[in-house]
Length: 333
Length: 258
Image (tube, rainbow over all chains, first blue to last red; front, side):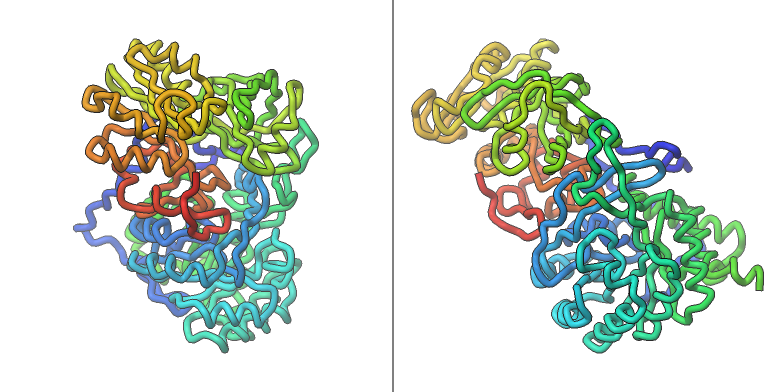
């Protein structure tokens, strides 16, 4: 399997020349029994542990359904707030060495405008997790009360939107109170997505657990920046953005390991997962389920590619998917 | 790729609100492909190529207004060429364009003539003063050049579709379409039975231009127009959002305008 990123330079989608688009995916013959990838994590039953991460192709019901049809075990929507937002001016992304910088700025049509997209996405047959953001516990709770989804993921970690995301999520007491408020307002599982832009992510995970979270999701992007050396301008329209992709994977693996070792609730691992080997590593670190985002630069085929590799690995090792979760900490216990 | 630095070498006024900018680099685009133009300190916007080293821009908002203040010698950031362009098929083609949407078609027509493909053009504008690239289309169209204007000040009066009656649609191997969505939808609706022979260069709200953010996804398939388009075969546009609604920068649905 070729890695989509050949460090030190990102392999960015090149110019196409023809009308041929991604051909419909033909699922491999599964008549020979492959190990099951189904897993229960964060209060949801998943046919496989690989979910579409928030902010990636999560703007319409059709694009979420397409991820489901391509093999995602679940899909997370674009983060939804209480009022429509256009997001930051461009450039909104910068491909950098071994990763991608983005500052989209939480564009969304508001949770009221998005229910029909969620309803459409649910026809894809996998759980639809609504990512939501607000500037206070009350605003989070208001959105959770007004929206129907299979679970909520609280965006307490976006590093580039004023008054939102990590501006709340870096304070353990706010993580706890927001989580508690949403938990009280909703009867579906609550996942809390954590920021790595802190001295101690474990404090944040423990706070989410105290607030009643059903799972934590780690990690969101690392706050970062790129400058155009021809002109001296910061490239992102917002100056600062979040770094994702292979560059952040070792950070994510460490965060997941630290969280899983101490928390009683499951950890959903996200950050730079690009190949099935990355998926195995993240589960060994302690992730009960996984999310992929930047790897979608290669197209929707990544879900099936990673799941197939994961199943073959389990077969070769005569392991179950549950054996993988947290193996790294059991090795040293 | 990060944006590359391009210097504007020439600015040419085509019509009151339309200018062509020549860049100091030939990025080897296919007609229909686009670039992301970064006007530093303002915004980054998608622009179609009107030749291998030019873009033709209509002033419509903050970013294009900022560009219109820039002359030769100033520089911009460029990502591209991006997306899938037009593919030449057959020996006899028809170009149908409206307004600034004629720009990639003039580029395509020049490529077609070099490949000894016969070309007919049907191009429409609001008024005589808005006509652009008339000479380019007349020199590439060995079959016919038909011009329409909404106000009847030049050519055939009426919308672009008023010119269809003057053409034998069956005789063309492939039809290439670019212009305002309302105009393209009018043409596609009228030529529905030919939709598998129409390549349409369409426009949606692009943010990332890398196929990951989802802002340009088109119902009902969720086609990512920034990487799977902007040229789409028209039979994929018949039953969905195209011509009926579009999403804005926040993802809210609204009517198609223009």
